[in-house]
Image (cartoon, rainbow, N blue to C red; front, side, top):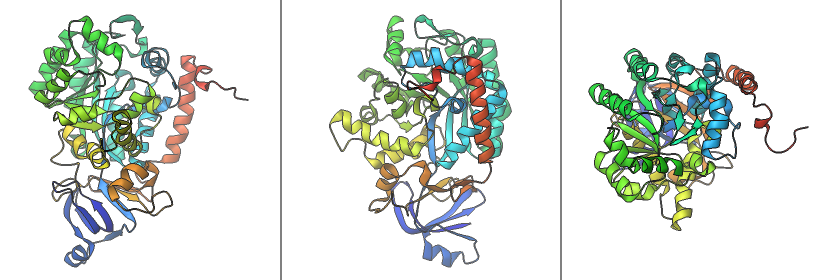
Length: 462
């Protein structure tokens, strides 16, 4: 297939932008990139998709997502993190059935695909939800997924025993770690290598030192990557201090740091923590909307990047973001650091687009195959429609994508060479059926959890 007449933001090493560009896909790979006139001449018999008025970008890569949480979007607004977790989110998730999990996963994947996310890192999929359900949904939808299976053995948050998990989410070491290895053996590399299985341990305080060390040894032995929430709120920093550590000295001691690890949020760091991240080539997933909405703080992205730390971008979960739209996440990531630094040049649009593409690919260990549009790489890309009142005029393609576009402007999505979205419509999933199932099951979960009145908000509904 030859995709023609688009503006192509390649994010290749030279960061070239091709006007009136064309991209040739053969099987699941990019076979050629160049000017439309030249490629049409070289491949006159090739079937053509005209993308006039579109900007092609590499598929967006979300380095932190909770696919099971989309079913409780808007059910835990305006709460600080610990109350948000212990009194609302964990209670709801602890009442999920496997069918609820399936509805949530499909809703998340559908939203991500329609919004231009072609690859994601699931951060903590519980045994209760049935990991097979997640893998089958990725397999059938066509999206690319790095899927973290939860590892835990303690049912609390931080150093406060009152901050306990809902019983429905509690897992033992015997359930979680061997279960994660079993899922890695079953699913890793399947779906034409679109599925990768990761370890996803709970935040420090929710996992014993011994289990972290055991898991880290398995990670190194079998090349199983790790993703973990870390230093998200002040309570996390207090936990590390209570055991005589900073966030990164603790993570280093239990074997978590290294190029196979993505640490999420990373708001409460000191300079020595940042230096240790750079030294160990550990990656960071930045989630500005979640951190802002939960009043967790703001990640020191500029300092991390200046130290040489690779930073990707994530949306987090629907209850703390209310969206899986990485386009919107890019805009906030580009703006929020300007506000706190009083520097309008901080974290420019080009930097943010790198975070959502090639940096994300690097964090996932996939920069050799995705994250930029180059010959020989996987054909994962998105076409954004700029021919609309909200996108015109368009002087800088990168500015248009980062500051003006939302997921609703996505027109075409291709993953692994296969078109999954065309004209903004899903081709591999039944959107109407997904919405109806999610609407039905979300109400059942809230009722089962006894939170029908709590989720209604502050104003009377008449």
